[in-house]
Image 1 (cartoon, each protein chain N blue to C red):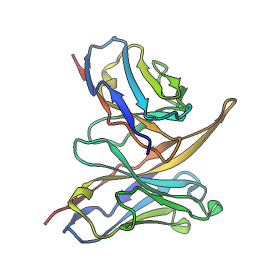
Image 2: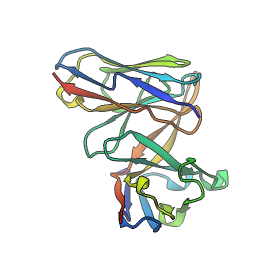
Image 3: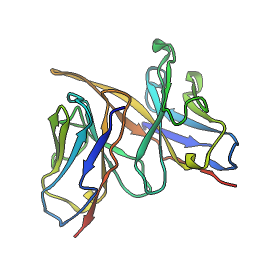
Image 4: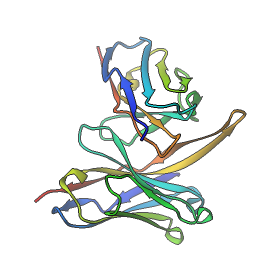
Length: 106
Length: 127
C-alpha cells in the first residue's frame, strides 16, 4: 500500500502569510495527488487535483506542485477563512490520505 | 443543486449491523463511481470502499480493514448508494462520508479526485 506523509502536522500563521505544506508518497505516484481542505464538523472540500490543477471555484491563492513522491500545497496569502486542516490524497491506486496538517491562527 | 446526503448512522453494539444510505441529486448518479470514506474523531480520512457504475459492472473494492464485513451497493433508480456494515467493531466508530469519484482530462492526461461530499453520518459502535 502507498503511504502518504504530510509535514508539518500543524502550523501557526498570520493572515497574509505565505504557507507551504508538504506531502510525500512512499512510492512514485506521478501527478496523481489531490489536496482537500476540511473545517471542523464539515466534509472535506477538493482544492487541487492532478497535483497542480485548481478545482473550479477555488481561489487562486491556492496552488499545488510536485510529481513523483514529493508534493507541495501553497497558500500565497493566508486569509481568515483558510484556517482549517489540509489533507493530501493519492489517486494512483485507490486513494490513501495523508494524516492532515492543521493551520492555526498565530 | 449538486449534493449527497447520508443517513442511517447511529449507536450499535459490537457485533451488530447498520446500513448507511447516500442519496444523490443534481448530477448523473448512474454514471458515477461512489466511494465511502470515514474519519474517526481527531483522526485522518480513511478510504472504506467504492462501487463503480453499471458500465463498469458495478465493481466493488474495499479497504483491508473492512473487507468481508462491509458491502457497498447502489440503486440507480433511486440515485442512492448504500454501505451495509456487519460484524461491527469499536474501531469502526467514525463519521462516514459518501463521495463522488470525478475524472478530469487535460493535455497531460487524466486525473481523478473526490469532488462532491456528503455531510457525513456518525456511527458509534459501543456496548
